Image 1 (tube, rainbow, N blue to C red):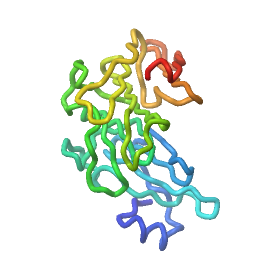
Image 2 (cartoon, one colour):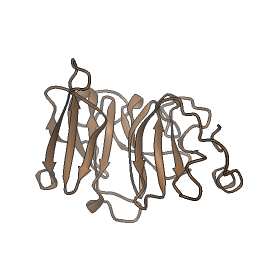
Image 3 (spheres, one colour):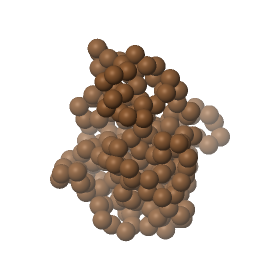
Image 4 (spheres, rainbow, N blue to C red):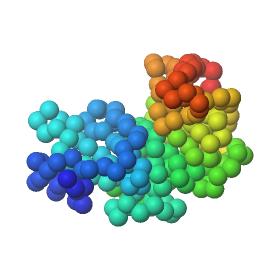
Length: 216
């Protein structure tokens, strides 16, 4: 299968095409209406969008973030090994290889820098291989704007909250042991679940629950 170069035409006129052969799919997220699924294709440096419909199952994926030629890059029209993603009106991407988080409107051509500088580091204005991102839906409702994202800063073994317009993040939790992977953060009702994997024992993981009130 192939990725549709023209999303509207492809989805309407070629419903029987096979799903695109992704290189290394890692992150996955549903939109609020559960009508589309987004998948980060890390080695192809892109994020794809697939429709979900009983009458037209996921036959065709379209590139909604990153370059069509799959090239990595550091400019705002490119990604480098994207992993964790979240959808809340906009698409939020942990652009792991670029040490940053971007917000991206579908087919916008480029993203908006939300967190990090693009250079790795352990200061609060920097990230090091961010692996997961969450958006607090209760505080993300103002047009297409948002007020904060939660970022698993894997290379620095910590979780940060980054408020909209802020030049730096706020430390929520330091992770003394274990690795934060692409699915390290998830909502569970009003709580955040943070999962770390043991560095030495494959498959051994620990989950920590934090109530939303603890980080407001």
